[in-house]
Image: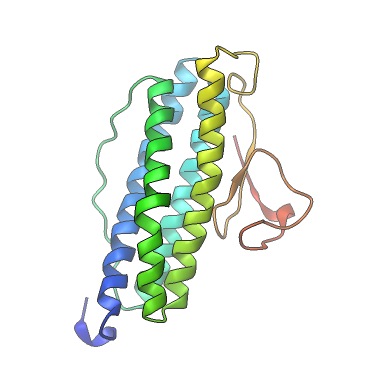
Length: 193
């Protein structure tokens, strides 16, 4: 990154964007691996959820890369080989990761970008934060069903989840209205199975 490409203070936002970009790409890879494990264990609905969440993480990374480039930075990341355990352990790991991002990672990133009047970065972080909350809700439900042995529920059969291609809000159904986070038309949400 060239120092002349951004104003004083925005170097923190650039570092935050780069950290978020790498984190989201690694989470994307982890969720793809978790989906394969869930399918192999007969939790095909959980596999569908992990694929939808992986797509959401990919959208987050794309949004952050776009802002990085607009600010004169370069989107680079080192992707780690994901560790995969049982589906229940993977769900709990995913839930803990999402909660960590909601509680610890994104609020200060939003504050930093807002303090330096970088509304594009702040919006990217805010969309990610809100979409991660949808993952927490879905993972929490899935954990309860797996722990309760509810194999007759949605966790066993592959199903569609809907992901907003703009903000990555993830849902088990397509709302009649627009996306609740970014107002994108619901009829244009991506169906992920």
